[in-house]
Amino acid sequence: MRPKRIGILTSGGDAPGMNAAIRAAVRTAIHYQIRIFGFKHGYNGVIKGDIVELKRNSVANIIQRGGTILGTARSAQFTTDQGMAKAKKTLNRYKIDALIVIGGDGSMRGAYEFAKKTRVKMIGLPGTIDNDLLGSDFTIGFDTAVNSALEAVDKIRDTASSLERLFFIEVMGRYAGFIGLAVGLAGGAEDVLIPETPTDIPGLAKQIKHNIEKGKKSNIVIVSEGDEAGDAFTIAEKIKAILDEDYRVAVLGYIQRGGAPTAIDRILASKLGYAAVNGLKKNMYGCMVGEINKKIVDTPFEKTYSRKKKIDPDIYTIIKILAE
Ligand code: F6P
Image 1 (spheres, protein in one colour):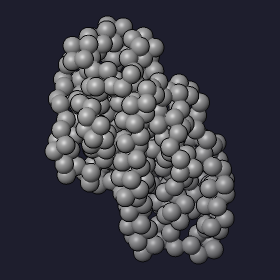
Image 2 (cartoon, rainbow, N blue to C red):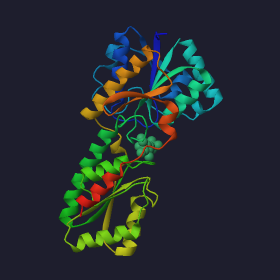
Image 3 (cartoon, rainbow, N blue to C red):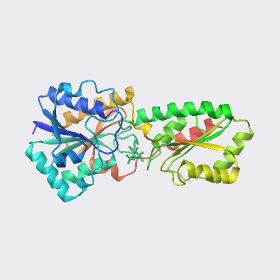
Image 4 (spheres, rainbow, N blue to C red):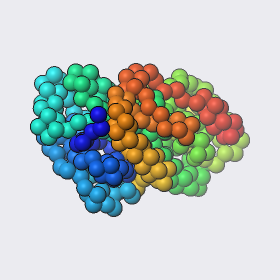
């Protein structure tokens, strides 16, 4: 049955482009005469009944804004039976037929558990800078985060070359190296350390020594925050213990999560927000909509987070060959 009143929320870490996705979903719903309501601060808003009806002009002028106008949260309460029961009560009270969730793996897991328990119709959109969800080649926010990190890496390259210094630059990615690999390739890094591959500290030290001896003016090592050998400071100290080479560390941190979304993220978010409402209209739910090989596809919630999305090992090979 075609929904009459749907809800939308953003959950987990915010990602640039979430607003563009909200805008697309709201405008598409209104186009089909479906009323749409925003829940504030992720699943917490559903539990508390923190709800606002969204109209065409509620989403005016937000396509270019980072963050999320709905606010977001990682809701511990939503993982409990009690929290879910409260959330269900809210949806009944406001006669919400279906819910759109924009977020990362934790948000898709929450959607799956909630739908299983309550039979609420849920549809997801991949919104995380980490790009670690199966079911979409890219997640909303990834491209912007990579470009923000890249801008910083380019600036650091200037000072690194001028002073002929070794730099360790830490990028986000608690469990995944997608940001690290993309920034490493686009930034011409000398090496990239990611959680998916074993880090060879003596090998890295040898490589840096060789680079310096052959006259490389700067050495930039990109470190994903989740690398199993440690964070950028720890790795830098391990290298120093072998090489006794002066170094600097830059942790890029939360600047990667903010800022105006790139055109790529706005376009992806707009397509997926539109697709989510169309999916619900066709009675499609229990899945996340994403884009694979330029086609909009739907993937059952549980598949998006239960298996790890694989990095492309060729990218690492290219980085190493180009940095020789
Ligand atoms: O949004 C994803 C992510 O940026 C991870 O890469 C990072 O580890 C994590 O969120 C940190 O977010 P918070 O400090 O908000 O928990």
